[in-house]
Image (cartoon, rainbow, N blue to C red; front, side, top):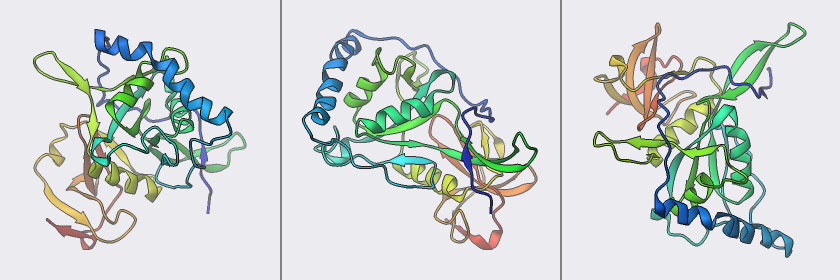
Length: 255
């Protein structure tokens, strides 16, 4: 069996994304003013012989690391933690992800596996970003702002915003259940995973199902035939639809 390796250059394009204008309010600037001080406090724990994070947990569901020990979120109520969508420019999402987990914050970097010929002409499995330029962090809004407005170490990182019709905007949050669905998709390491805009008609009025067998067991979504295969589409709120590879009807349970 071919072992997947990570490829720095992403090979997928997602046309569902519209990158908004990123502006700062006076409140945001006050947060930005204290960024270096707060991150310096976290780093000082290491300098004094205290480890603020646990070693990364191994995982096949994309790349994910949970905060532990003295991480910034360790003393915060679980209901205050949310999955924020972060956007890095010029394909630097993996770099930002690695920086953030080094600070002890839980993050999820979704990846998929594709077949591609190497320089010797041999077919290899390569791990690529499933959502180019994007990843997720599990934290409070206050801590998320520290990363989003860090002009020193994360100058290429911003929130991905939820734009409202009245012109207002707020950092986009994805529900825990949708992140769990996405983890299952990534852990399958299936090659035929498709990323689609939210307005695909096939997944607007289909039957809601749960996958009860196979590589996608546990996923809840909308079943529909798309690109010649029966698939289950899962919504990522405000972002896109992720469509699984083929799922036989025998593996589905109607909801």
